[in-house]
Length: 236
Image (cartoon, rainbow, N blue to C red):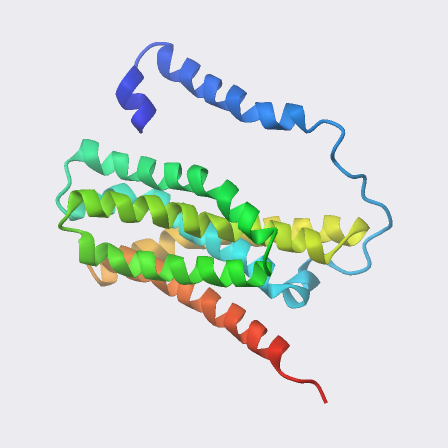
């Protein structure tokens, strides 16, 4: 939305701006040539078995898919229902996207140094707190944008750190299957997110949007906390 506000919506400029952004995003991939490991060995389990083997990582994909798609699809509408002008409501999406871009590298660096399950738990808790905070700051435009920026970055860690957690857990053919399970559950979230968030908005206007996103995060936090508690129990 911010790019379109600058270059307009007619003629070649919006298409060229989009192409330039994709070209910029391709630079890190070009620099990473030769660094991709070759998977060796066949997969030893079915794709969906990884949901049971690594629920902290795989459910992170499902929750992020639901929150990302549901949020992006309906955030502008939520802004309109809160009284924002249409142009301002469109910029809400930009705040979330910029936060997602800005915070992934520092969160990734942190996840290389501590237990990734703790980072995922913190990301889920932050997503829960941020979504619950949106109705509180809805009347303050600057605070609303700030919360969306931080929330977008912290909730985005569910995908990136979840994928890194899988990479640390599995190798070879199992890693290929684990990645497939991750992407499948992410796409399940993409399908579930918009209708559930939309239903929440209809059931509890205008803040059902925020409450539904908070509920997604709360369910994930419960799963991760349960896994960490189980891992901390002494074994007989």
